[in-house]
Amino acid sequence: MTFKAEIGVVCSHPKETRTVAALLDGAKRAQFSLFTGFCGILENRPCAVIESGMGGDRAYIAAKQLIGLFQPEMILDFGVAAGVHNGLNVGSVVMAVKAADVSPLIKEWAKIDPFFITPPKFAKEPILKEIIIAPPPELISAFDGWEKIKEGAVGSADFFLEHSLVKKKLSKRGVDAFCYETFAVIQSSREAGVPALSIRGISDNGEEDAHRQFRGGLNAALSSLADILVRLAAIKMAFPKPEFSAP
Image (cartoon, rainbow, N blue to C red; front, side, top):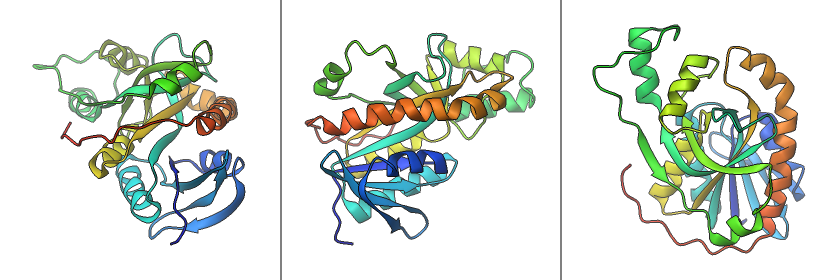
């Protein structure tokens, strides 16, 4: 593989991947050992996109493969999420300043109540793994004043959020948006010593009508993400190389 990327993008849903590919000049299909994706030019910067499929384990491996094959200067976790914070509506975008693995909370709750219909009474609150993300100052300045984009914490687990009680609990634990893959992508990049960012478009409210909202809100979320990705790619940012420490 002779193509070297400045930006590596990890997506999970086919529509997410197609959204990024549509922005690339000269987009060409790329074949990874386990996944597919695209290569092309995004705002004059070589860009490689990989589609992991759903789930943290797949996203973790996909990020590793992307880094190994294309040696990007930065990894971008790109996709949709459920809004947990009340100020996030469909079409809003969260720029993650923290990624949290909320799997321990979900798993312990499921042991008590697999249907998530009663508030959990834990003997001890499950500990969440967290990774702090520090977007470069140039990036923060570029989006200053944009009402559509908010800084926040993104929680991840292999779980479709469609429960008001779970959403309320996540909010109390400091989570602003929820998806499957963000923590895995950030962790994989951190282990490889590659700077990473995450932008997540809000597609639904994470409550009981989340499936219906997701179907109706997916395109709006992706449209917002596309606008921000173009602007992000045009910014020349200085990324300090992260030092890996186990979260």
